[in-house]
Length: 532
Ligand code: NGO
Image (tube, rainbow, N blue to C red; front, top):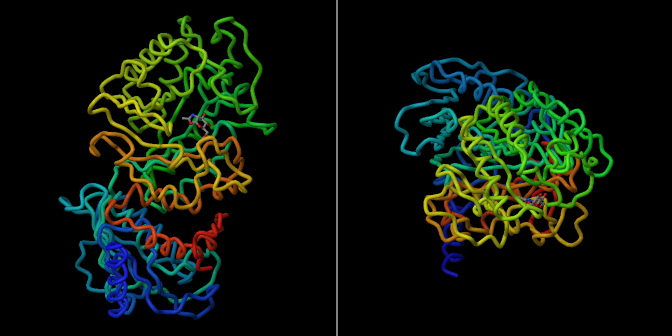
């Protein structure tokens, strides 16, 4: 109750001042029009920034106008900043019917400048930033280019929603005055995509990357192998893709990424400050590989390809040396193609091995990853084997209560909270519900610190997941993602005491036109007052 009163009084004060502070105040100004109109002035009238920053004051009665002559100035010698500058220029280009000039500079210019700056020793830490909008210009400062990128994502949400239309619809672009200082709660803000059960093309994965990058996610975990399909080229075992990549759930054609395509995805993600974490699931979830090579089976016989959605029936043969030669080859090639420090080796849902066989397998697999210079991540079942000190455990089971050894680094993905392949409600057509429905509001209501009895410093962060037994194209993925991805973004980024459902709910409603302009196939949950 005290919380509600303080929210209400902060709101009343802010409205009286025409100033929006957190909790996010909605000004009395009228809503933006339904579509941008030539010559019309567009300014954001309701700040609906997600995830909410550490501290933010937005004053919609004062504003900066971005015009054709606005210059984007970046710190010298920073190619990443040039790229961020270009993305801002591209965003406003249709509205301005002009491409803004990007140039290097030292910040001496007086006004009419959007300045992107990397300086040493920012108090916000590595991914933090400061964003200032005044009537004379815009400035984003961070100690890293990643921080500037996150500042640019916040700036994007201060721009009018109509900026997201790509067509030639000229209008004047205004940004409200703002003072924002921000940094994330967690360094691991993961988005997981299963490309095995259904395959998603390079363009679909790029769209997925674009959508999560807007909300400051910084990890893309790709589930590249499972019973239903092997999805990445491995030169030393070519049948994995030619045979093992030819199926998916039901009767779809499957597919796989060539090494060049994988590199393209890694670079695309990197340009948006997202690290790719590849997963080869083992010792179970391995039917596609076993179907491709008889020698990986204990009986020497390749099983047929599989297009159902059962789990736990397959596993590599722990008693054969060829299994570990296979892993060494596969993980070696994958390590060489992956610039990031992590390889995920699955380890989940093994039903046909003894505990001793499982432990022996996972121990050797960890050693192989380490030999190739990478850090292991595995699903929480790995806790039943001996861990390397560096191994990271990803908790996914709602009931996985077994505590990790003290100091073990953790990623939290509880299925009943942040698996976005779970149905919204009983009426949903897409999704599964083995972990219960995950309706709008469920991810937001979760505090990662309460999940296990471990210090928060052991939690690297959280990772939301979309498994693809039911979604089979990007429209389906968008439907599962939006609006819940915005909830997860705020759980991952915003400090717990600054999170309030009613406040978030209002800001979420304020994202609707932006999503529509971006062509996102969102689920317009009746729980939210969408401003459409
Ligand atoms: C589980 C299982 C996956 C399923 C998914 C569906 C993990 C780590 N293993 O999560 O094979 O696809 O649930 O929600």
